[in-house]
Length: 192
Image (tube, rainbow, N blue to C red; front, side):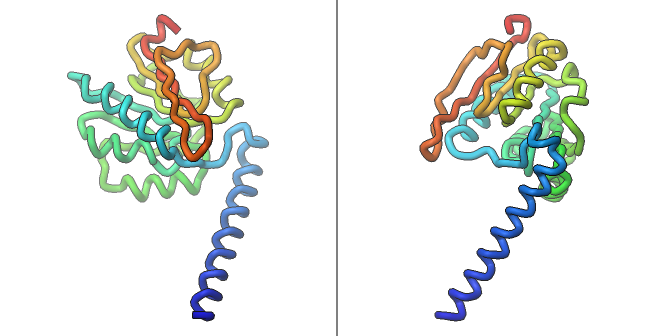
């Protein structure tokens, strides 16, 4: 029993050190936290975002293009790409490690592409659905970009952070693990 506890303690220490090193790496290459390290969608927030995306995707009679800005390891993209093979999905993230994990997880999906780049460089006018889980700095910058580029019939689902300068059509309470989170749904950008 003592050996098991010692091994468990060693594994836990190695995991903690690895996580700290990842956050240091992320801080260094994220332009001083302008784009935060990967943090997965979770809890009620994830369920609501997936549910709203599924409603939108299942109602379409034509193939759609979906982009996840800050896709991380694919918490939202993977279940959607598996459920809706007729649609094309793109995951954008600046982080090399999470992109590699997502590529590995999506290797059997021909309808999902992973791009390692700053999503502020992508032309959003070609997408029908935008998913994002950002921080305040990135959300402010993105709201200006979206207002200029998004299709008039596109939908945006933003988890946790409101896109300033845009008017959400729906706001869902997504309190999870004691955190007062929300999911913002924007439709028809002509009314943004």
